[in-house]
Amino acid sequence: MRSRPVWLVVAGLTLLAAGPVRGAYLGVASYHNCGTEEAAIYCCDPCHTVMRTRRRVVWEKQEITCLKTVYETVYEDKVIDCVRYEPEVRYRECTYTVCKPVVETHYKTCTYRVCKPVWETRQKTICYTVCKPVYETKTREICYTVCKPVYETRTKQICYTVCKPVYETKTREICYTVCKPVYETRTKEICYTVCRPVYETRTKEICYTVCKPVYETRSKDICYTVWTPVKETHYRQVCRVVCKPVHYQKTVEVCGGRWETEVVECPGPVVKKRVRTPGCWVWDPCCCRLVYLPGKCEVVEVQCPPRRVVKKVWVPEIQQKTIDCVRYEREVVTCQVPYTVCRWVPEKRVKTCTYTVCRWVPEKRVKTCTYTVCRMVPEKRVKTCTYTVCRMVPEKRVKTCTYTVCRWVPEKRVKTCTYTVCRMVPEKRVKTCTYTVCRWVREKQTKVCTYRVCRWVTECHTRQVPYTVCRWEKQTCVKQVPYTVCKPVHYQKTIRVARCVPKQVPCTVTRCVPRIVCEQVPVHVHCCPWTLFGRRLFGCGC
Image (cartoon, rainbow, N blue to C red; front, side):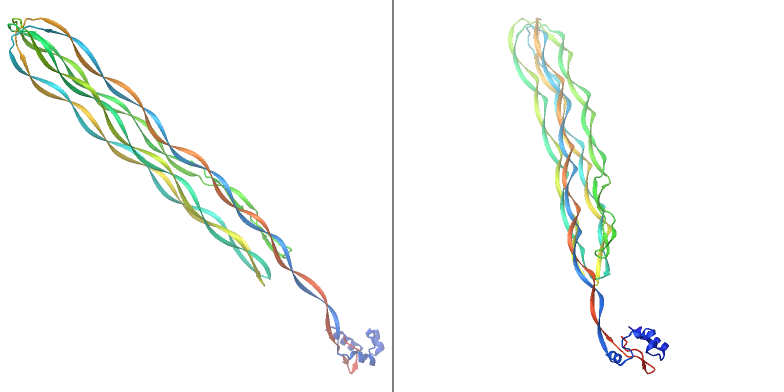
């Protein structure tokens, strides 16, 4: 509109004072009624209205449905291998030797002479030796080893990855949804089994046999003949039994053992770990902006580091010990005894003679021995483990000019977990055992014997005299000795493992779509007459 007066002015300067006909050659004559009175009337209207087409942008709200990724926690059952130790009682055969007394009766032929004496009463002192049992109580210390549990607290660091939201601010009126992380603390109970030693005191009765001397007084009638004495001195051999101690040694097998530490390296479990691949930015023609598409979630198997298990193994050993023993052997000793023989006028008489007989009577005795048995009792314990679960809560926001784009940046974190390790430490202990030892002590005794001396008419007689011989026979016995062994029992248990599963959820988003609208707008145009050098150039300037 502003360029039209310029070229009209240029055309006017060129024509100067040209008339209507000359103006017609230049195209000025194309204007209707220009240069007449009617044209002057037409152009004198101050303004008029013209309809003009105008384009403008109209923003329309449009709702679209898109898919949003939501992570849902799914628990899966996983079977793991566990080991517990159960005590098992086993028996082993122990061989020992017992000396059993065997009493035998023997007969010997004794020759004696009988004569008729003239008695003369005399007394003499006889010394003899008696074996007297003396019981002595002794003690000895027995060393044994027990396993004592020692609990040790250890810590380890666990690396895990969390997604940290990073917000980017842009200016535009949009409707958007952000995911707000909500952290929730949960606890779960873990059951585990430990072996606790239980000590039990037991007693057992041991039967043994001792020989107890029993003295018995007997009497018998002796018929004799008294004669006029003719004194003669003779010697005779007298046999008597003496208990002679014999010292010897014997080897006894003693069951023992020791604890050895065995280190076993167990491979670590294979853990499935969810890893998200890097995403990319894609142009969204619907939203007219770049949209970040996260990568796929993949399950990767990760091998955990191996762990070392220390356990105690009982190694049985059989040791041979040499002990000193004493046995008593009966020995017959012969000695010469002088006696006087007289010859007498025969006279028959009867007298009662008293004598003492010693016999050994076996007597059974019982003693109580106390010993301690250790057995491992499994005990179940429960510990509470605290862990944090992060869930994303969608939140819709509306901003007029500013909107925030949320992108997740993986961030590695480290947490420290504390656990307890139980190891068995061998501890040496000493107990005192009391036992009784019997030893035979010789004791000299004296007795006064009254006898008569006379002269006899010698007469030989023979008779069978019984005597008892005690001998010891060795007898081998076998007994079952119990002992406890911790036996590993493998079993499986099921635990619940949580994993995140992506899920597509439809959601409705409202966006603004631009649309161009054409419309007729009335425009008011003003007409202004132009004169040059006092003359009218045109009739109208629209």
